[in-house]
Image (cartoon, rainbow, N blue to C red):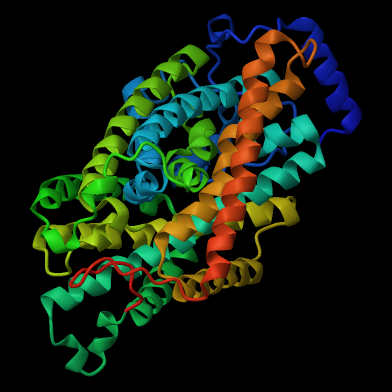
Length: 490
């Protein structure tokens, strides 16, 4: 049974009277091993079963205390938590950062990358701070505690939209990568019976989504898929190195105009913020990383966050600048598509990136499915039929969308603009303003108001302009020079 609104209100009043209103994290150096909870039926963190084993589950059932507490010596080190968070940030969204620079302009792109890195660093730590104030250990529980049922509805919508948009983006990436690699290795594959489908973009997406990602998505325990993060990290490194090495070697006919190379600002700044936000948002995983930290405290978590954001910034900066400076106004949503289809080094990057999508899609399906299960059937036992139909519907809808567009930039803009901006810039300061004591108009709360208004502004404008771009063209096709892959739907 969830707590009543009256209990919520009394708890907030007591918290407001008994805690200082300062936002200094150093004064809240909690060393408890887990978040306290007086309700045993709170929603479980998304992906909470990752890296768990049957032995661990049995031992937790045998010892009820193990469900809430762990020894100070247990948990991961700061370094391991840093790796987890860095891997959470440096994901598939990084592929669209050169495109974000094209939209914003070179110098504005750098400014946005720096500013959003700082803001995300702050809001991630603020989210953990809010969790401590409320005594909650998941984003869903925090929003429900602060705002009741409307808060749970809001976080469910935006978490679902973020994961679902990621699924669509990853299906598009499969179409951007695997067919081009196969056609490069087997130029006459279109003449081979049956196998010719692997050279066709739409059929290739359909085959691998339905016969590889879909069966994996039906599993309830996806711990083995989570361990493929090493492949994801390797793929990102290969992409960065390949773009940095092959970019300067690109022929003049596929390069962009040097006249716009160092533009200060371009017309699509709001969409650029959405794309960068998609790449940087890791708030949905932050509670899990905090909980896995040995002796979790806000100060120790701050170290993890700072180092992770620094590594993520320099990694994103390297790819964004090296890709944009070569292709400038011809830069497309997937920077790998700017290169010729017969470039061996780039094809290695395409193959590694595409293969990683096979297991990344099921991870996002798991998030979407858990959001729906938590919202509509929070207390219902597991049902195989419901599990099957939800998974099937998610895969089919995602597949349909990915077959209708081949523009990864649009998918990143819409997903980042509508959901990532809210998860990163709106909800964390909004929760703080709700939970913190004192007047809402204190000077110390001005940054929270500014961050929240910034997030709302970006969400509205970037979503509007992205939808306008979609409606202006029923079939979005961008060709970037003869002989390149570009963003054709072939």
